[in-house]
Length: 486
Image 1: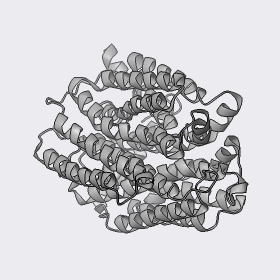
Image 2: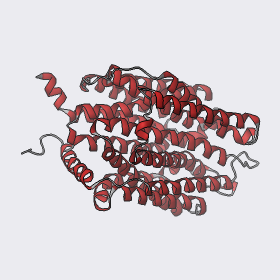
Image 3: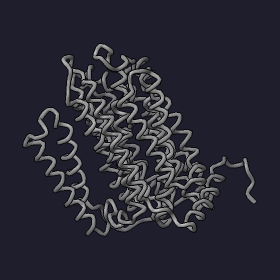
Image 4: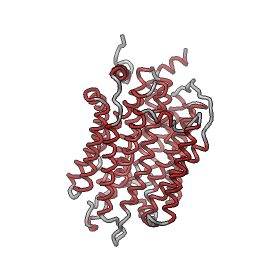
């Protein structure tokens, strides 16, 4: 009876999962405004310091499916605690780092925290009543984007009053609290999946990602036509093809390629990948653009705090439209919400590329981007939930989030290559690098618009069933004791 009461109190479980996901999301972007400071203090280059962001996304892309698979085999609650411990350990290494190599190592360890996503989705699927799964998954997915936006805003005050080391010490408190609460309050799932980890797939996945990102990021210094860059890009293609072949033949794939063939799944995942390219790239490079001294002929010479405030509209509008996305989608459909969100995001990138001389232009572009991301992310979660059977909700949603992270890793590396392709005498990137970079993001998001058009519209029966589930789920998120269920 005690176990049943513990399992029935899913609201406590949800709050713990939300705490863990928030800590992971916060660490995705908390260091971004501090990159110029880290570059100066650790005596490194802009291209190298970008790996502080890229390696986090790369590590998360690799460990997200691995930790999810291990959780299915040995227990999701147990692996959630282990994932949070790894996130905490990486924070300690990064917090103590006094060289760029150790800092990058710490960030790579932190990337193991990407396992929070599939584990949280799986726990929600196992522990929540069926009618409450959709909103639980959607809120966790939306929190990743919102938490990333918050990280950009709060980083400035932390660095101004303390140092960049505290960007890791402060989240450490949240992570430890989440790990303790997960151990005490999250029930161990009775669901187990027999099988093993597909290590060949894991090695091939990490291999082609590392080859691709290393080749792209080093291309400005080595030369795009150099044998090393061409060799790495060719190696990435070969390893990626081998990885897909291994996944297709595997009974326990890391990323289910058969599910990827479902039209509603692969089109949403393609949009998620393209959105990841844009979102993580702009979050990584817009603060650096804003902090560029005006003596360079562009930029605002903004402090870390001020550059975070320029991005405050992005965080606010992303949060608001993420909450409103359900109602908007109910009126115009989730597919149309994704298309509109993609179009608005594309307009924002074009504005950043062509109109970035005045503060109000940055504020408007930031607000528009938040609207686009907020609309599209929540709507994509809804479409994924509608496209797969309830038993596959967690797997499909985790895969969608992981593909977005892979897009972020690729996008950050490509954006770094574009921005640093032309350097001024003072060592700063030329304005044309940022202009070309933002235009690249606009082109990528325009491709997302095209991909979103091909997302199949859910059947009326599936849409009606989903709306019923969503309405019950929204009611379920009201704190206990405030309503009486009839």
